[in-house]
Length: 454
Image (cartoon, rainbow, N blue to C red; front, side, top):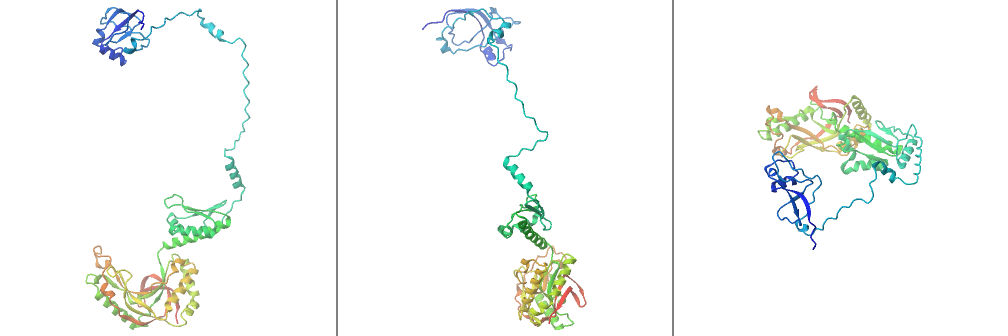
């Protein structure tokens, strides 16, 4: 294999620490190793130098480097050749001078210019004039839909409280009532869509939207709006407290003193059968307050009350027909409770409807008040559970009622099945205020209106 030709080069040799400084870019670090660097003029025929590293310099320095001197290193990048490749590297080709004389700088651009004159640049294209008022961008389909909506006449729905525009209406609603519009399993809103033919959208209860959206034709929107507002009115009414009730009060003590004596005797036996710890907390209902409840009413305003009085008065003829122009008779017997025997707070006497007249009367009155808009249809689906209240458990009667249990064990009381009275005749059916007050013969419920019974 041919060896490279001998070359004269100037090198600066560094020890290992100085080499590490150059590898890390610390070429100006003045350490002890740099001061001990030596520069010699070497002539060699090969580049084999095992264990040592050489760097080629542009200038040579011979002899030791003084403390105030620094070697001048070449600025050209240094190429490293692995030791295995150095022995077989070919000799670099000599650099020959250019065959022609260099061209002056000021003549280079002219020398590169083409012989023919360049073609004239094309004239810039003229831009169309921009209109002073520019229409907002919209895709063709959306623009067409907007134009169609603008051409359609606006429809105002006549239903109250509905805010309508175009083919939709928004019905304000309390978010707490959204569940009433949706119904169990979504059945109510599905019925609304089927009956009206409109698309009804109810927001979720967590939404900030406080309106129900209805879409469809004007007739569909009007029908859906009426149905929805009826549901809203009914749900709002259910959140109101009961203020009045339809009932059958017992005759006054002056009319039937034996009846009141029998009721008081029954109450005394019930209290005596109660556990000793619960006896002081039981209150016997005054006999002048004993009655049968036929239906509970919510009459929050004077207008509602006036409508209720009118509904009861107009039903006079129908009431007499329902009872076949006979006296309404019942019997009272046995002790009962709405809750479990060991968790009771109310004890009442069972009602025996002798001629089924009470059931007929209750059904008639419920239907009349639904027709008058004073009862919701779902409130009149079932007849009331007829009862005559005898005792109430009141923990507050014990003074420190915080320690009293909320109910008592009435197992012994409910075992009493004696007949209180076997023929109780009611003189009238009445519209009564729910809160009792002082009466001519004791505390009683205030009578708003009444219809005398045969």
